[in-house]
Length: 122
Image 1 (cartoon, one colour):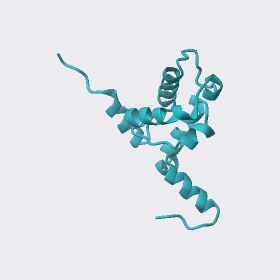
Image 2 (cartoon, helix red, strand yellow):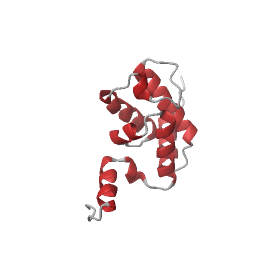
Image 3 (cartoon, one colour):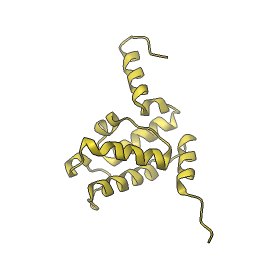
Image 4 (cartoon, one colour):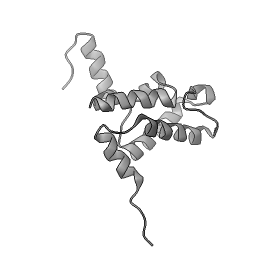
């Protein structure tokens, strides 16, 4: 039986090249939240915390996005962008800029320290 290559690899290569479309990412994030919340009517513009999301669910979302797209996101980003569309748009904008460091906790800390006039850790 022939099986197709897993779509994970294709998605990961698209993300690392900065060409992942926000809609693809948004659909995936929405789908993951629907599964995690067991709430099939969740729309991409809905605040997931209004639908019962809890902070303890965020690591599972992080694992799923890392596995599917090869991206590491900070839990902070999920709280700052609580709708699937908002998170996808943020990640797509930063991916398009080649600024992957903004999606990691270390990158956020570096940016925060730099914006306060402190030397960034190396």
